[in-house]
Image (cartoon, rainbow, N blue to C red):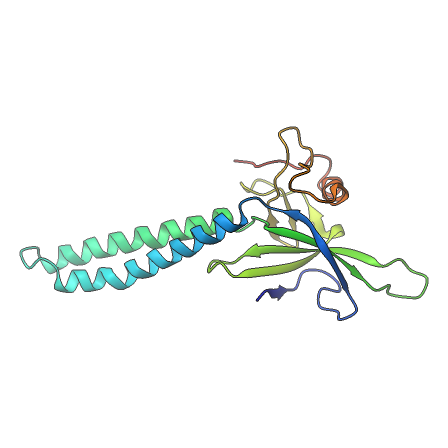
Length: 188
């Protein structure tokens, strides 16, 4: 089940019309599996290390067994944290949302429903207005930012929209226009 995260106008309106997927990240399924394995192994390490320290080799002092357990647990938490931070901006899919006009005679507002995975590999959908899209600054693995959050989309080597990821190139062009010309592949 996807969580709705605030982030743009009309994200939860019942009258909104959500269209088909216009962008699909190629590593979405792989990313989900990697996150699940990372969190699972971190949890097993956090549960297993204290047990191993308590019932481990009696020839090794308890203080040293605890130090080893702490070091291994810290490594597990650290690598899972780094994986989460690096993959946090990755967009698995984008759908366009057409909100009803604010007043009769006005144009309908169009925004993006951006789907990502949380730390525990649960789908998270954020509604982003095109007007909120900005250049990402210096954060690695970010193509753009909106409302203080970073997002990553795949682009071609020359900054073009790859047809096999973008079903509607106009979405890419609109994002590109908002970031000031060229959407970058990565700052890393």
